[in-house]
Image (cartoon, rainbow, N blue to C red):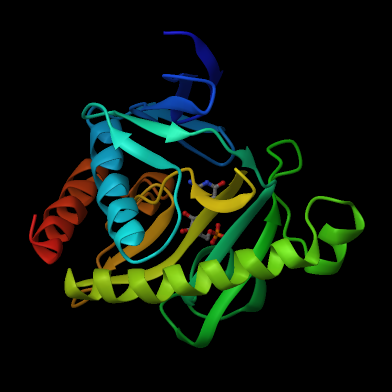
Length: 235
Ligand code: 5GP
């Protein structure tokens, strides 16, 4: 397979034609923009399985995504998209950088869903950026940003109810979008690597914070998320 790009947690290969690519999930875990790095056997398989279940559920509910088909336990065929250089962060409960920045204790439910934009740039550490700044530097148009925001809110309402059914509080997460055939579609992955997921009864963390904060039991947390999602989806 011809490698097109290798990221921190995935490798992208050439696909079946010039409109598709193969995305392969790696076992590597990184945090702090690559400062902390470890191999966690099984992570790629778990993230692929979780993200595929979520992308299929979103597609069934009218969200356009890059997923074409699942190829193996760790790889998918996806539409090639021109990635919008914006990370869309969605928050239902205060945690992480939001708690630090605004002095709101982790675990505080937010009165409304927060959608934040960050400039996608490893070099700059993905800084938070507003609509006005994004349009000023030509990263996206206001129309595109409005579309990202409304897609994020639709995804949030679908995901919040899915995770609740799985006994999981969807605290916050990151979404990425791309443009293909003139449409904005959901890309990348939605997994415990990119979401904060807490047990609904105990607030036990089942996501990458277990790795970031040296809590141990990372793979066990991801396995629990997969098991509960399968049950919630009847799969
Ligand atoms: P925070 O801003 O608190 O660091 O992150 C908010 C949410 O977005 C968390 O669920 C976190 O996992 C996710 N997130 C933010 N930036 C990134 C990123 O660069 N990569 C990944 N995988 N997730 C991110």
